[in-house]
Image (tube, rainbow, N blue to C red):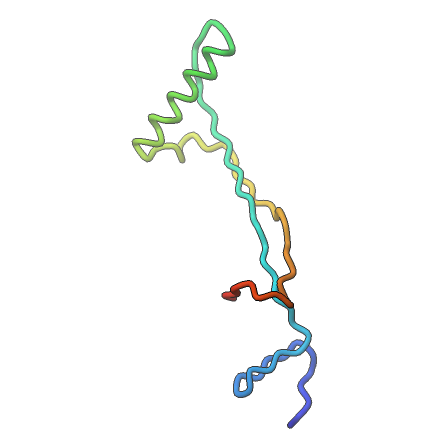
Length: 87
């Protein structure tokens, strides 16, 4: 059998050199901004939440999205485990 260079995949015999299995968790954070006119902060929070629920029901909340970030939370090495793996 021929020697394969590192990180090379040979389909016929399904040999993988120096590759490991990983699971990566991603966290997506979205920020929304609603304008409300109120007498105090507590009432402002309540009204903003109500506006958010209404926008969500109408599938319009994307209009109020001011930013979106995706961060890597945790990386798990599952190489020597029986964890189901679907690359």
